[in-house]
Length: 504
Image 1 (cartoon, rainbow, N blue to C red):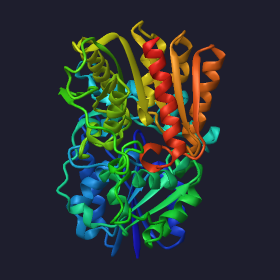
Image 2: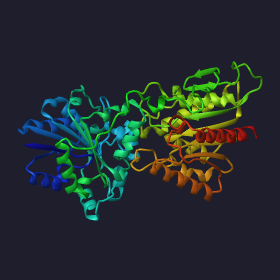
Image 3: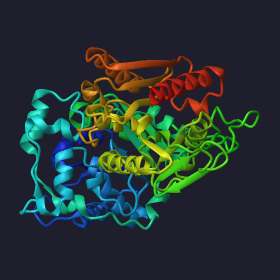
Image 4: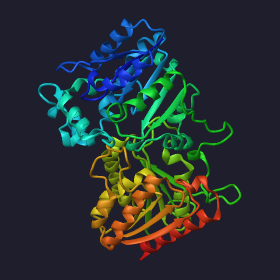
């Protein structure tokens, strides 16, 4: 007989599973709902013990642990200690978590996250108040929730003990022997297709998702499916317990991951010329000629800003990816200084830190004796597009052009963890006469394309100096994915525009 241990997320307890549990029991399954401790002083370890008690009390041969949102933390903590008792772990609209992670890292509500990260502002009673009725959207998509369900969610909610979110999760790795399932509530912006795209990027942190023991399901609803679609959720849990679900294929063994592939302008048959590179902290500079001393007067510079979020464990790091080396060398070959900055955008919560690191790198670039500090262009890529915000809102006089390639220009659905400040669609109102060169991928993901279209409309409304360069058959990351003349021509046009503004 299969038994389910159901562990809910922030501010909720066993009551939230009532309708799902009833449907599971109708199929003959046993169900154990976790009532995680909600009193002051409870920590993550307290919640792990809560789940362990349910596991130890169950006699069923097949035991499935289901962790919703924050609930995945105590679920993994318990599974790590009772791996031999667990037949499957189900991530229900929950993030990937590893040893040492703290749940606060995935708190989507910006205000709550800042409060939890500042010891001076931690609530004196050790409890984070539950959201009011109008604030649940800050913790996840409320799509599918009826007015009555939202009322009940608010009425039944309990405060969240702060320590449950700030204590690190300690894992030995034993839990990795247990098969897993992932259920994506797609109204939040994450789906199987999106995860397949992340796996296709070749970044190693996504490789475990291709394990054949991992199955995935999409559920078209918001973050609380136990209230919005309980019958469908129960059906998916039954299928997950049976080992069903979509499998994600790994990249072919002989195929290089996209981030490691050569730049379209730096292929073996016509490689970009070598040029000297100087590394200063998180800044790399590529100089024209045979040496940094090959020119007498300071030169304009283009700073290329990589996207993300990128795992801090990925090697090589972005500054050594062919994409950014290729752009640095290409700019140097055009007679200006190409530069790349490595910032620590390791998660959606890290945009403020990345912005500070980019600003410091810009200061260092402008202060370099070989750089004309009054002639700088900034060029952003992918998820780095949100980092254009500060420069668009208040462009300094020395910023002669801002360029972006396949950028994300507004927080995507499900990106509630991004600081509200990072919103280029709103910031473009302050761009004034700053030239903006935007290169669009014709085969862009729908959500990213929608954000770009919103940005273009806002730029036109505010009469920004926007130049659009389209790559109709280009994909997100076209420099390494699409080695065709259409991409080469688009990059050449974009670079020519940027150089024209730098030299004006």
